[in-house]
Amino acid sequence: MKVLVNALSARKGGIVTYTQNLLDGLKRRGIDVTIVAPNEISRRDDPSVERMNITSYSPFHRFLWEQMVWRGYVKRKAPDILFSSANFGLLNSPVKQVLLLREGGLFDPFYLANMTAPQGLENAVSRYFRRQLMLMSASAADYVITPTMAMRDMVASWRPEIMAKCGVNPYGTINDSFKPGLQKRAWRGDGVLRLLYVSVYYPHKVPRLLCQAVDKLNDMGIKSHATITISLEEFEEMKGSDLDYFVVKDALDRGIVTLGHHDYKNLPSLYRDHDVFVFPSVSETFGHPMAEAMSTGIPVIVSETPVNREICGDAALYFTPFSYSELVERVLELDADQKRAAELSTLGRERATSKFDWDGHVDRLVESFEKVAQGTL
Image (tube, rainbow, N blue to C red; front, side, top):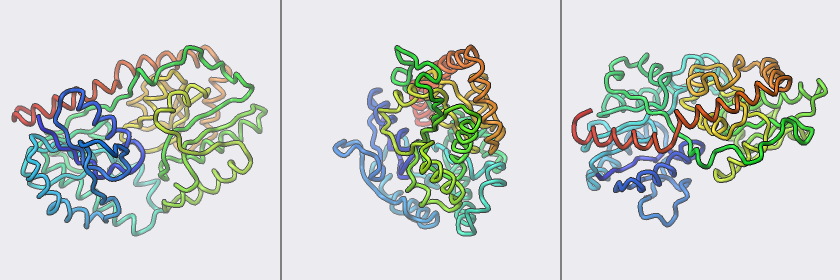
């Protein structure tokens, strides 16, 4: 089977990791795959990767480019399946098309009510056109995939007819790499309570909460420190980031937080070197770091949202979005009850390996491709 992957939006964060892992997974299954991606995909010498850079295009410009230039490229390639892996697809595609919707904030009522005002009018217009283009793409696709049921239901609330051709295929973690270490870190083993947040920056990621929580814990006499895999430069690229920047920069200056990107291959050891993983994001379509953290056996505390609850189930503690005081309460629960922390570690590993395995995701994806190509889905 010949598959063409549109990964033109793979610029940063989870979609870059997803695209690179997908390429490896499809090749191992004997799929004739070509991935078209921007320069952020680091396979410089891989003949299966072709480069096109359109990430700076406005939604309208991108729409016109895809419907004309990209359409011609797809026709020349003539794949059995076009996998549009990031929200936008061809209208009246010349080949069978599977679309992955992965930008949930555009459909999430909580995000729209709480996160959009500081981003200004320009972003509001962009959101409107992106949402309309995504819905048009979904209507035109032969099959639509979302990574969670919560994401599927949010999209269907805007365009109910999509539900009839929409399936859920959870992402996965490479559980053989993301696994507990041979020697588990003792809670506060070096005398410091170490909190970790793995993410890239968008305003809905709310990294300031971790800094505020660490501040309060230190004030209570519990020596604490946070590691956040976001750089200060990322805040400057986003409207609506001023409050996060101010709080995080102040925490950095006072030495209670460490910032900076970590290579994907180093993430397993990063998780294992911390006491608890905190995920304060208020809007996700899946949330890869939650699955990675559970797989490595680190206790997990996350904000209470439908997607986060779907991913973590009973393997996490929850706090009200934006409430750093509740986040501190959850941390204190684990600090006072090591048996509960160990229980969450075990539950998390079991949940990750049973529900969120990367090979399972790719197998389900290939099965979808085959059924769409054969006209049986």
